[in-house]
Amino acid sequence: MSTQGSSYFYPIEQSVNSQQVIAAFDQFTAQYEVCYREHHKPCIVVLDNAPTHTSHAFQEQINQWAARGVILHFLPPYCPEFNLIEILWRKIKYEWLPFSSYSSFTTLKVAILEILNEFKSKYQINFV
Image (cartoon, rainbow, N blue to C red; front, top):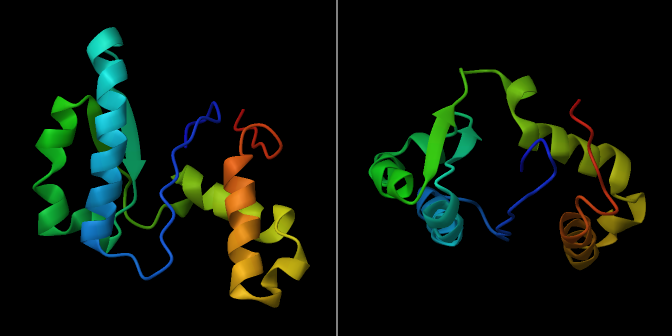
């Protein structure tokens, strides 16, 4: 998610592990590579220091993603206020998600996917 509101989401319904995060990054970087080849403007992805981001398997992929134009920047430890995705999740949980969404897993999933699909149009965050 960028400060301008563009975003890429990779929904997963179970616990997240390094292989799933790698798969998400592989898919994103493959898509971004097309733009990078044309405009030569790298995409900088800011990450926290979650174990899935610091695992050996994840770290081994960083050079491959950089070749596709995606550069990773890790935040200092314990700085969630700098992590834009934490701001998004706070907005989803406390402002945009109706209380009725918690009635079942299915309604919660549908409501979250609706918010993510309408992020930037109906649901917006102003980072200025």
